[in-house]
Length: 456
Image (tube, rainbow, N blue to C red; front, side):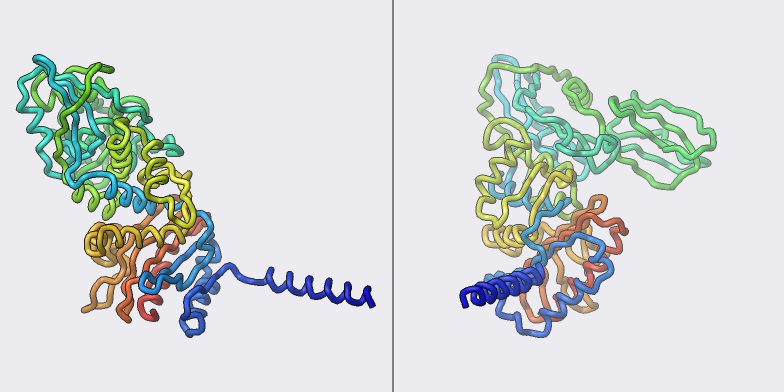
């Protein structure tokens, strides 16, 4: 009799284990679990030939009812690519003032000593900020720059070594100038060649251009050396593109030389000075930087903002230190603590969960208001990195406000979706480790967005 009871208990235990192991990773947590649209959303994912080739995490959250409407591996970590910028945005909006500190300075006798704060706006051609230039131009003192408050590398952790000439990866620096990029102007004549009157902006970089003769082989029009600013220029039959952006190698000697050239007067460099920089020039409107780095996914601005957060809090520009501070100060309440390594999302060391992203999206709205937050996001079919996707039907308002993220084998989209029933929902979809084209993945994600719009 005892043996029979033991056998019966063992059989029941095995059946229970089999049942539990058959449960899917998709979780329905809202009271809508009995409605017809939930299995349909699940079915779209399950039957998709595209998502079957990817590691995909998804979360759909209703802030009004504070419920997760649908989850798919939402507590797992994924490479978020430029969705990392949502973390940077929240940290910057909390830590930095509306008008950013652009430089800190001290006057001793006849000398103006100054240091940067990481502000990326100085002479940046994407903006029309002149306050810092006007301030420096108007000073009569001897000018001495120091970078003693900078303790970071010029590239982010995990960035690819061969990104050095890429416009999406300018070097980080304590006092950016011209966006830390040279802009080579081309014109199409018999061959594509550099514009003879203004071959490069700023003009300072003309001295680095060396012309070579084209031998008819496939070759880049302009190519920068890896460890210097030397530009090999080969006129050739090529595209009619008018401007090529190339990052320059930043160092302090180059900076003071460029600044001297720009101001028309000598600027000296000192490795360190024994002074307290008690005066600050506030110049750059933060709002302008936030809109650009989110809407067009400007990596350079994102990286510099993380340096500014560190400088604001510790008087030292260091990305890692700024991130650690932000994680402890602003993100301790997220469901899963992000593994956060840079400001832009260029590194694949970044890891975050869809669950944490949808909750962070709600923190943004709660802290700063829906209207302001939406003004920083790309809009489906209207502007930014999703201007060609998620377009609303003719006569309807835009329905997707979301940040994109793209790296090799990685596509992400997180933001807000407005449904036909009048709801605003938060969503995050992160796709990793696939070998199909990114466009295939984006089109499949669009099907998900359209379904949610029409059925929720």
